[in-house]
Image (cartoon, rainbow, N blue to C red; front, side):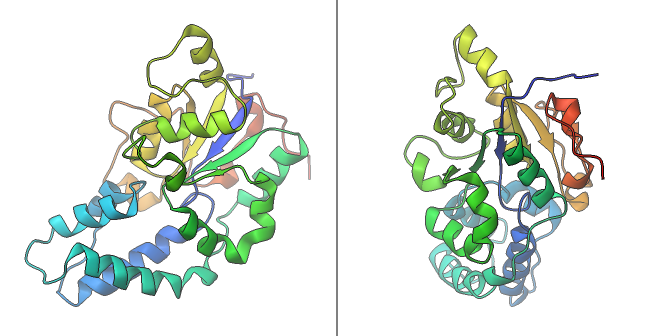
Length: 246
């Protein structure tokens, strides 16, 4: 039985489409390790989905005794990250889902807290895959000055607007805008992303790392479904065409 109607799909990127969260963890702990510190998953949960400067500032505030400034951390971490981006791969089930949606002409868009420059580096080895989005990629630069990032819903509303959906740009909306928002399906791996998607009035599939499940919940904004992997997604449940029988 179809439980939802989906007219368009919005995807987070890091840790959802591509395995960049692994790289972030490696680099962060490489730097913190010099000071005998480690970013545990309860800390990481507080950073995922946040813009880079805000994330770094919050991270270092949790380790007040270490001798590194936010600016120094940002420079060093960026150098280390840039050396690793070419190793990034798609996560399980992602290629199949995106190709399926494109085949059935379902509008898709990426909404990421990464900057455009960072997106270009991360996607350099995956250009053929990201071509499926036909340029529909919203980065933090595109919404700068209009939001402080997730859990605010603005980036998802802006992304829907990129697809030509009349959803408005503020959390408060008209009845017609609410209906259009309800037809959007968001895929997220971060708690703040789940909160942003629900605040945007959209349905949300949460695909968290299993270690995140041990330390975090989405709070009052409950996802509509939680999956261990995009491999387990059933399109027909969301009013989308089912996968072809293999």
